[in-house]
Amino acid sequence: MTENIYVVGHKSPDTDSVTSAIAYANLKAQLGVKEAVAAAAGNVNNETKFILDHFGLAAPMVLTDAAGKKVILVDHNEVGQAVDNVMQGDIVEVVDHHKIGDIQTGKPIFFHNEPVGATGTIIASLYEQNGVAIPKAMAGIMMSAILSDTVLFKSPTCTEKDKAAVSKLSQICGEDPMKFGMEMLKAKSDIKSKSALDILMGDFKKFDFSGTKAGVGQIEVMDLADLTPKRAAILDEMKKKADAEKLDMIVLMLTDVMKESSDLLFVGNAASAAGFEKAFGGKLANNSIYKEKCLSRKKQVIPPLESAFKK
Amino acid sequence: MTENIYVVGHKSPDTDSVTSAIAYANLKAQLGVKEAVAAAAGNVNNETKFILDHFGLAAPMVLTDAAGKKVILVDHNEVGQAVDNVMQGDIVEVVDHHKIGDIQTGKPIFFHNEPVGATGTIIASLYEQNGVAIPKAMAGIMMSAILSDTVLFKSPTCTEKDKAAVSKLSQICGEDPMKFGMEMLKAKSDIKSKSALDILMGDFKKFDFSGTKAGVGQIEVMDLADLTPKRAAILDEMKKKADAEKLDMIVLMLTDVMKESSDLLFVGNAASAAGFEKAFGGKLANNSIYKEKCLSRKKQVIPPLESAFKK
Image (cartoon, rainbow over all chains, first blue to last red; front, top):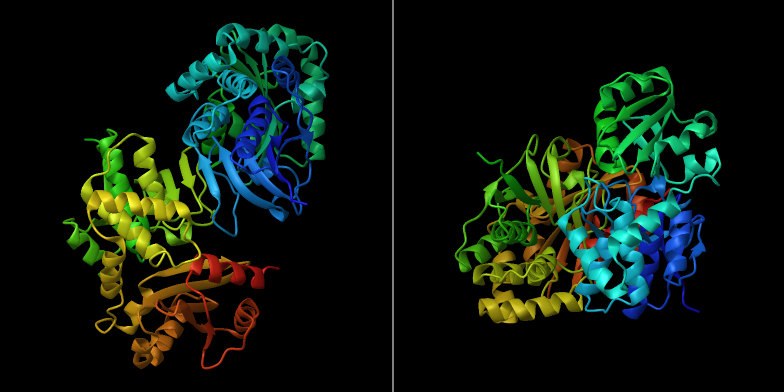
C-alpha cells in the first residue's frame, strides 16, 4: 500500500485553503503522484460549501493531526496555523502566499511562496508551468478562491497576476467572475444562522508578536449592521477564548465588504490594548477601533501589530 | 537615487552561491529591476575565479553586513549562513535548494526552494518561466555551478532537472560540460597553495543540531593523498575555530571526487563525538571516520547528524 500524502490548508479553513488543497492534489495526481489526497484542517465554511456544491465537488476529508504523516501545506507556512503535530509529520512541500513563518525541514523540499492575492493564483500557474490542462471544476474553485481572498479584487493584496488568473480561469469554468463573486459573498455573509462562536472561529489565526500571544480573526459581511445584534455575544466568546487559550489579546475584524472598511474588535490585557491603540493610531471605544479602507488582515492588520509590539 | 537590492549567497561563498547571485541579478535587471546588484559574502574561491575568468566576468562586490539593506538571498535560507545582521535588513526574495531554515519575514515575499542539485538549475528555469533569453556568459556560469554542486552529476543530490539544465546551458555557452567540468575541478582541487585555514574555511557552514552548535565544512580533491601532509595542521585549525566560536563540534569532509568517498574529520567534546559516531555508525580513529559513497554534505552528512542529536 502506498502511503498517502495529505495536501492540507490551515486551521479554521477558508475557501483558498480548502480549494488549493483540492486543486493541488488534482495537479499532483495528473503528474503521477497518485497518493496525493486533498484534506481540510476542519469543517468547511458556508462560502466554501456553496462553491464546492456549485462546481459539483465534495468537501475534502478532515485531517486534524499530522503526526507520522506526509503532508503538503498549502496557504500557510506557520506551525501555529497548521494541523496539530505538523512538526512530528513529514512536510514534503509548501505552496503559500503569506509571510515566511517558522516551518523548518530536515531536507530540501519544494517550497514556493509568492506575494500574490491567493494561493489559487500560484496553483493555477503551477498547472501551466507543468503543462497540465486545468479541469473545469478545478478552474472554478481556483477562480472562487482568488475572488474570495482578494474580496473581488478590492483587497490591497490583489495583484495583476491574480486578475490575469481569474480572467483565464473564468474562461475555462464558464462563469462570469463578478456575478459569481457576488453570489459567493452572499453565501458567505449569511450570518443569521451563525453563532457568535462560529463568527469568531470562522477565519481565526494565531500569531506571536514579539512574545505577545494573539489571535486575529476576520468575518466579511455585506453590511456591518447585520452583526450589531450579536456584538455583545461575540465579545463574550472572545474573552472566553482568550482565557481558555492563554492569549494576551484577540482581535476580530468585522469587515464591511461594500464600504471596504473594518471595525476591529479587541479584547485583551492593558499592555496589549496599548499596543493595539498604537498599531491603529486610535483610542479603543466600546471595545473597538473603526478603520476606513481596511480589508486585509495580512497587509493592513498584522504588519502594524508586529511593528507596535516590536521590542 | 534608487536603493540597491543586493543579490547575495552564503558566507564562505562557493561557485553556486556566487554565480547564482550574478545570474539572478542579471535576470532581475532584464526584467526591469535595475537596482539589483550581485554581491558575494566574501572573497571568491579558486574554482569560482577560474570560471568567472573563463566567461569574462568580474567577481562581484563583497557584502558582509546586511543591516538596513534590501537583500535577495540565493543558495541559502539560514540566518547563520547569511551575511551579518541579515534580520536587520529587508529580505525581499529567497531562491534556494537547501532544507528550509529559520528565515522569517514580516510580509509575503517570493521564496522559492526546490530539491535540485544547484541553485543554478532553478535560476535557469526562472529565466525560462519569465521568457527571458539567457546570455552566453550567464549560461556558462550557471552550467559551471550545477557541475560544481553535483560534482559532475555524481552527487546523490543530482536530479534529471539538473542534467537537462546543463544540456541546455552548454548549448548556449558552447562548452562541453564534462571537459569543462574536469578543468574546473582541477582549478578547485589545487590545494598546494592553500593554507590549512583556507582548506577548513573554503566551504564552511554552521548548524544547530537540537542545541549542539556545529560547523561542517567540505573540501573536494582529485586525490585524498594530496591532503595528507596538511592533516595535522587542519585538525589544529579545527580545534582553534571550535574554541574561538564556542562550537561543540566541527566536521570537515575531505571528499575524494574520483573515489566518490569522504574522510570525515572530527573535533569536539565527548557528547558530540558520541553523536558523530552514532550518526555514521563507526568508531573515531585518528580523529576521523571514512565513508564510502559519501559526496553530499546536504544529503549524506547533515541528515544523519540531525537524527543522531535529536532529543
